[in-house]
Each structure stands twice: as C-alpha cells, then as structure tokens.
Amino acid sequence: MITIKKLSKIFRTEELETNALSEISLTINQGDFVSIMGPSGSGKSTLLNIVGLLDSASGGSYLLLDQEMVGLKEKLRSKVRKENIGFIFQNFNLIDEISVYDNIELPLIYNNIPAAERKTKVQEIANKLNIAHRLKHYPQQLSGGQQQRVAVARALINNPKIILADEPTGNLDSKNGNEVMELLTDLHANGATILMVTHSDYDASFSQKTILMKDGIILSEKINNRNVDVFVANPKKLESC
Image (cartoon, rainbow, N blue to C red):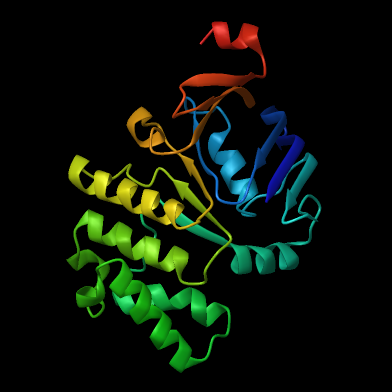
C-alpha cells in the first residue's frame, strides 16, 4: 500500500538548513497497524504529514497504491488525500460552531456525496461508534473521549484506505485513552490500515510494529507481539539513544 524509498525532507531558511528526514525507507502493507515513536524533532510528524499528503518531500520516492506522490501537484495531492486518507488528530480538530452531525458530514460534502446518502452514512458511523445520541450536540458539550470518537467517525466516513493518527490519546485521560486505543484495535481487526505517531509505549503496544526514529532516520523496527528488532538502520546511532 505504501512504499517509501530514500525519502528526504529539508527545511530551508535564509540562515539555516534542517534535514527533517534523511533518506528513509519504509513499507506499509494493507491491513498493517504501525506505530512511529521517537523524541521531539525526530521527524515522525514530518513523515506522517508527508504520508498524509499535507506536506511534500524534498527527494526520494513515496508510492501510495502504486502511484508516485513525490512531485505531485497540490490539486492532485488534495484529490488523492480526500479519496484515500483519514486523519485523527491529538487536538480532535473539530469545528466548535457546528454540531457533531455536521462535523462528521463535512468530508462527504467535500466529496460531493448526495444529501440522502450523507445522512445514511453519518447515522451508520455514529451508531457504530456509539455517538448517535450526541449528533445534535456541539463538540464543547462532549467529553474528550466522545470528541475523539467524533473525530474517528469523521476520519472513517469516506471509507479511507489508510488511517493516520497523530497522538490520538495525547489529550485524554487513561480511561478515554484506553477506549480510543481499543477502538483503533477493533478497526484494525476489521481490516483497517493504521499509521500512528505516539509518545506512549503503552499505546504503541496495541500495534503490530513500532518504528523508532531519531534525527530524521529510522533506527529500528520492532515486531510488538514477538518483541524482537527486525531492522536497524544505524546501529551506532541506536547505541547513543
């Protein structure tokens, strides 16, 4: 589903050049649940943004569904993003001025789905995520866990090929955080492909594989259920962690 080869990202200013990603390579297959971990500034959010087509790479190759994304024009990136990717953010990114129903419906409007079909889809996903009784409420009237469920519903409403989760439990207490991770686990069990950035070892343990990043490179990939490292990109760098 995703094949990344020697991907790089350089941020430039008049005085400074920063290598956010340094020729990393990565493969994510359909149905995988992968976590990315690493300290602040390691490049994990930059990688997620490039995978999500919110940012562009400086070099290398990024194939999504066998289509090259590097160098793609913004209009085409936006089209691919809307049709294939769902986002779950740490801060929920809900619109406070509109109802839960309207927040969930928004991606369908962007994709020009007819009104009757939109209504059916919103009701179905709300029932699935146990928030149907909150559709007329506004985001600020919900708990953090409920808001994240609304965000998940919005991410899933267009049946995306891949779900990108950026610190999905970062603003939640332990109980609500557990509920969100159990929800992601259920989605994965039903065939969803998930790429998640997290600082939490506990959250990462729900995924199949954890990728550790530092200074813009991939240090290791660990299969969680076997607890063994299967790849080390830079052993000397890893020893310095």
